[in-house]
Length: 358
Image 1 (spheres, rainbow, N blue to C red):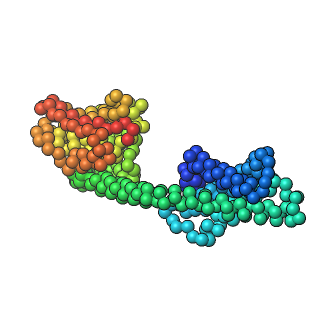
Image 2 (cartoon, rainbow, N blue to C red):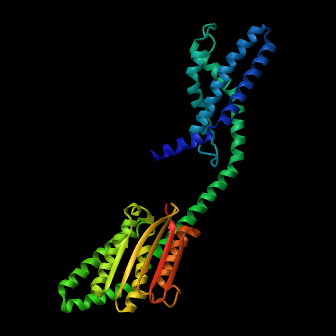
Image 3 (spheres, helix red, strand yellow):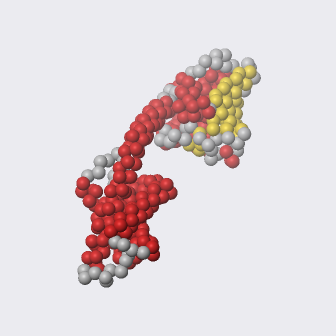
């Protein structure tokens, strides 16, 4: 079914007004030349000329367009050679398609001693052979002209496909490089909780399991909705709150109107992880994390993570941020921006600006 649909699209792309006019002109010229030749043999009147021309005109165009139609149906494209068997099939199909029209609209077939069916057959075949060379010639010329362009287009498509696969593979590899720092600390915390607070350890394990389940799901997609990223962030911060207790608080300001916008999986989460690692942990687990999102100029999504610690001394990027910047470049090129600003002992704000349409 897919092959048939693709074939029909190819046929539709080849049928243009210019092609139709070219075939019509060739058929009409063949009809005119055939009439002139016939009149040089048989003396006739002016009215007979137009009657003869009209008959050839109908027949030539019927056969000519039947040939063109048959070629589009049976040919394998400009990059394939035409076998003799396939040419014969094109001719037979053109004959089968045109035969009923010629029989119905042609000249009176009872003027000869032959049966009308034989008359139409002989007339159609003789005219088909006469007009076929012109149609096949134009098809051959067009095929020769289009073949280099077709091959170049195929090569460009193949190169683009290879490049797209390379970029997607690189993106998946980057997404797979999870910062292990969070997992090491969580597992260590879980190990300690098992000894003196089994119920809390169980809760931590449940949160970690749900977090891992959601992240594995997100790796299968190039983009996810902002609402899905928010769910992951909540699970991540809930795990951190089990670790740091009430010292850690967070606030998420993401309007419902923005929750359907597409973003890279774990892009906003990476900024949250960075704030926990470089601010909250170094402040003995105490701090406020504010996650927000807004629409800028209707075509850019602004995502920011702000902490109230403000102790970022070195703005050189760690593994998580470097990974995020690489993913942004692979996906968006120069259409995405990342920035991080620290106001010492007050706050640090990491901000992402990405295209709103993905």
